[in-house]
Image (cartoon, rainbow, N blue to C red; front, top):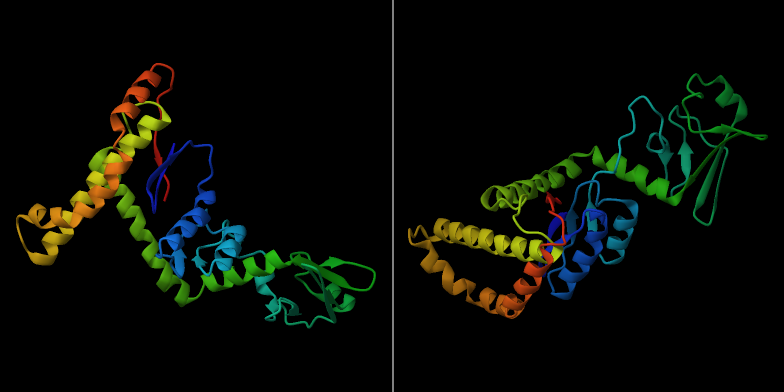
Length: 265
C-alpha cells in the first residue's frame, strides 16, 4: 500500500494506484486553502511532462529531474541548438539547418544531404535520410523535456533541488518512530485509521521538539498543548464516529488480507 500526506491529513491507497497521480490534486487542495506554492520539489516519478504542464496551468513550477537518463554517448535533442520557439538552429556539430517547420505540435528540421553524409556522427544522430535532405522530426513535448535536461545541469537547479532530500528524512522518522510500514491491522479502513493516528503522534513529537528548541523550556508539552487545541478541535469531527468505524473495521478483519506498507516520497 501507499501512504502519503496531503492537506487534509494522511492518505492511504492500494499499491496499484500510481503515486504520480497524487501531485495535481494536492496542489489543488493547497490552493483552495490559500496555501498554494509557487514551486514544488519532487522526484522524477512526479515530474512527468503531463504533471509539469498541468501544474504550470495552476501557476506552479515543478522542479524535478526528468525520468530516465540518456547516455552521454548518445546524441539527443538537447545537444542541438534550440531557439526559444523550439526550432532547431544548428546540429551538435555546428551545421545550420537549411529549413525548419512546425505543424500543430510537430517540428521538422532539414539538414543538407552532403553535410550529413560527410559527418562521422551521422550514425549516432537523430536525423533520418530523405529525398531532399536529412530530417529531424520531434514534438513539443520533446522540446520541453530537452530543455529540462539542459536545466538539470545548471547550478540553479542543483541549488534548489538539494532541499528535496529533506522529505526522505521526514518519512524515515515517521517509520522509525511508529513502525508504520508494518501494521497489525487489516483492511484499507483500518490501515488508514492507524496511519493517521501515528501521523498525529509524530506531529505532536515534532511540535514539542520545535517548541522546546524555540523557548528552551524543558516542559515543552505544556507549551505545545495550547497551540494544538485548534488542531485537536478540527480532528474531533473526523474521529467523532471512531467507535462505529472500528466496529465495522473489526468485522472486516476476517475477510481482508494483511497489507504491507511502502512509503511514497
